[in-house]
Length: 474
Ligand code: GLN
Image 1 (spheres, helix red, strand yellow):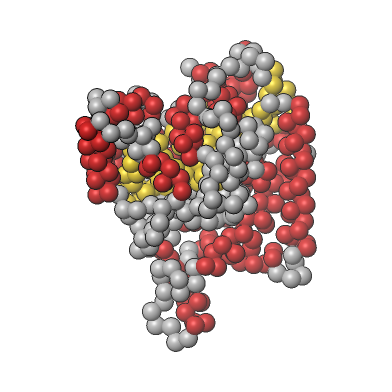
Image 2 (cartoon, protein in one colour):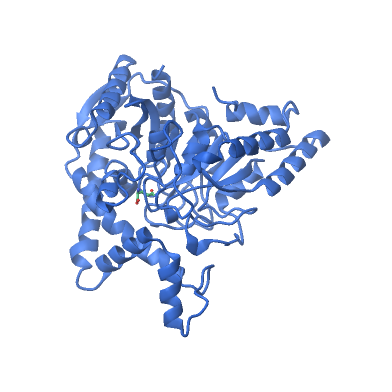
């Protein structure tokens, strides 16, 4: 049992003066402190959180209106610009960086009274699926500390399962919210590309970057998404929110058409993971859904496309860390060239360098057509195949990852093995559709999520089906 009430109830109690924001913040900070061994948190924002809680409690006492998230603590992945602690993005190169402004989503949550209590661990710049690429050490799995928590939003996901806060923010560029949610057993929601502003979030790959939500239930996720979603003048890719909002969604399976993705249920997938997805599909049928098999023939190419397009964008986005404008700068450089080379050479970790090299290569003249352009062509093909699939079904389902949480170090020396673990999460990112990981069962005694996908902008419907699937678990 969680020590946190559902978010809507929690806020209502703070608004009514039955619970104090100060007590909720202390409860969050205490839990963070008690569970340090998992290394989910890089830093707390305790001082600022306590101040904000104090002013919310004072407002309630004075009868001033407080927001829809009054006093609700949350944790932000350390690639969100937040006041009250450094923003490192998990990388040494940004150590000591103080946000000059806050991310739009942080502002929107704070305007409704939410209180950020800590910054969560991640693979540096979001590059990875295990948090082993963090310069702050690996985040450990809540059930088995010899295993990874997934990534890159591993710290955010673990913070939810270990009850440190009612919700956490992650980012999802190719699975980073869904995969850790699947590994540790919580909801991990990636919205339609553009639904939630990325202004003030450290960029990884701009054509797939999204803000993810980690929560204990689909209702909690929907409540928070409802506050964050919609246009932002500072992020030109943002889209209008659904006029119906994202809360109060139904949870009915009756009459829904669901496609189980054929290419993800074949070789290379752990039997226990497959069994979880099959069981959920059976339960969906029993609850009134029509479940059919759907084939997306280009799907096996998605991983290759992702690992061309995404490093290309990374190599461009990371060029801003040049030792001149942000944080780490090599102190003894004799000229500008040496400053660039030493600052980046010392500041970036191995994975960032690997991606910069791949990205620079695929974008270089002579190789651009062979790699980058070809990858974009296949990306379009993927988009068309998903569009065709959604003419036949309302939702697609499949595994989130081919295996449950793996051991720390298991893939660390082999980047290709690590990349292969992303084979099911990258396609929805390339296509820009919303996708959620919902706890579905267990394999080898570890949590396993089911991935559910919907057409672009069908986030409201997707949150509804996530809630329905949650109900099938019992
Ligand atoms: N694991 C994937 C990668 O390393 C996804 C990362 C992400 O979504 N930030 O690229």
